Image (cartoon, rainbow, N blue to C red; front, top):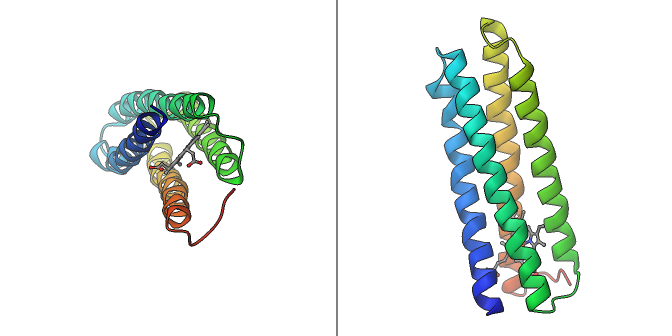
Length: 142
Ligand code: HEM
């Protein structure tokens, strides 16, 4: 049972990573459509939050059903989760409030979107790599 929950947690993390990669294309595909950028950014953030909520949910359910104690590894996951959410909400609010019809603002936000996505991808990849290293016994995160 716990194995299945951890497996779904792991699949959701990979799906989330794939979703983040899609995010790189949003500014590119909406280069000449400021309103399209705003709309796509809204859909992206909603999907982002749905997936991160499912990741947290499966993680917490795994902890409860598997009686898994708090560990260094889980603390890192919680910190990364909080950071991902914080940055995403800030980014979304900034885009929502901006005067996107202004060409310069649209360009700046598009470039910020790509940079923020790169940081988010890096955080998730880092966590996946840490878990792989832990599973291989290269490091201990207990
Ligand atoms: C509220 C947030 C989270 C909680 C409570 C949580 C909890 C857990 C638990 C209990 C496990 C299984 C036990 C273990 O390996 O330590 C696990 C595994 C894992 N988690 Fe999380 N997690 C959370 C967020 C995240 C996030 C944001 C990521 C990615 C950035 C992530 C990536 C992973 C990975 C890669 C595994 C290993 C899965 C496997 O063994 O196949 N987790 N998590």
